[in-house]
Image (cartoon, rainbow, N blue to C red):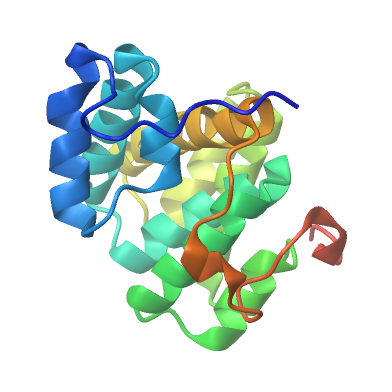
Length: 190
């Protein structure tokens, strides 16, 4: 597998430097995802823009993580599943929900389960899932949330595919055994 460059601010293409600097300031370090995406200013800016817009959506931080993990686990992306395990805990998601998401199972909370199921279905169907919209809306989500889910999926396609194509290394914090994950840990999709 090819190993792509982990760009620092100084060695990144000029068109990536400002975004990479902003990311480093916001996170307190340069995540390997961003350092790799810096190879393509369009990919880096696109990813960071989508990430920020999902963060500003009407989905709560826990709901965002549920949707992100639905896609990460579906795609079998260890890097992103481990990273979002950490972010889920940061969003005060309960441990049981985190474990269920990592196992490829819907949360027990009915509203979060509807979000997980809808997100996964839309991703699996490559968007051809209009029949699922009424059920999602009846679970208390809005039409804007339908499109927020599309933005989550787009964000995760950029990230998950980048990991798969580039040999992106894990972050140092991912060496924590509590974060370890690989696709064989999926029990069964419900």
